[in-house]
Image 1 (cartoon, rainbow, N blue to C red):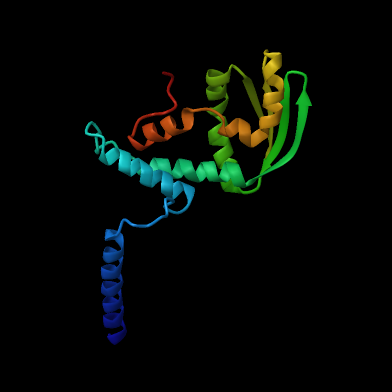
Image 2 (cartoon, rainbow, N blue to C red):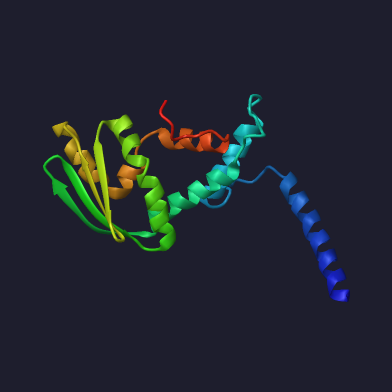
Length: 179
């Protein structure tokens, strides 16, 4: 019983210290923690300043799950080869974990269409067992080297749709419907 009491006192003391620390705004730091946490924190700030937000539709959990997928498809994959093609690039890759495989399946179900909308480039994805084969091509000869230079992660991160996508997701809207 005494241990429980001590714990409660420590918790109260920690809580008071945290509140005092939180009241300060003189920190030179700008990052909130990891990227996902910082993104969610930024979304909350924007939602708090949006008088039109419908809080009954806000879904930060959907955004958090998407950011987990983004992390997995960024860090938990192995690029087996990147072969230059006359009109683009062929990438062969494998997911390093079951979670990253699931993330890739979700991302590749929508990303080729988004890449096509933003760049005009074609992205074809094939999966055989746990190996993914991506073929990205363009009909614009002056953009072939750009595709090759971007490689897997550059092709996934390119474009200005990510922030809008995250904003829609956080507000409970479907970011994957055609506009």
